[in-house]
Length: 277
Image (cartoon, rainbow, N blue to C red; front, side, top):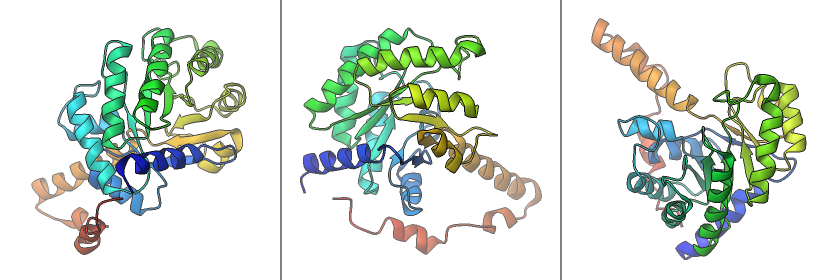
């Protein structure tokens, strides 16, 4: 199968994972190794976390990795897995919509079939314009790109709490008119508010795992279609690295290292098969 046909097929598969009555669970990854391990656990798609990717590159979150490095990383992930890949593209790695088109084209050619674009603290109208451009750029690259709009209303406390749900719905209407495919609302966790947003947004709702969030089965009942781990998997992994390193350096013992490792042979075998295709 040609690369173009493979991307188109993965794009169709990824869109199907958001169908009504289903819920896509995404343990967000940061490199080809974490992506392949997550895939081997049964993930039907893999998603990057911008912060986790930044930490893996030794820098801060916030597009500091750079577009070229992100594109190389996505290409590595897409070669390592057979499932669809979606990318946290933050604000598009560009000041304006024109640059977003270049980012999308590069990510699609690297193997991405979905992206997240966020409004951050900026005006939602700016994200709406980026969504329009991203959809056109994906089509020009031969992919029905799934664009997930992340709104930071809850995460950044952009409005008073009693107005948060209505502000999310206002932005959802704007993004829906721009052609977006999904709505990501990190920080949204109250069941009653989740249910309202899921019912009224007119888009597949994506929420992010936070302490105290309802279990996946309950979220699905409330109408959630996509559940993201965000940085949680990377934080847990790096937390274990710190624990094991402290034990080794401070006490000279190794129990943590051998508590529940992936066996060398099993881990190596994950990468022994031929590249996806």
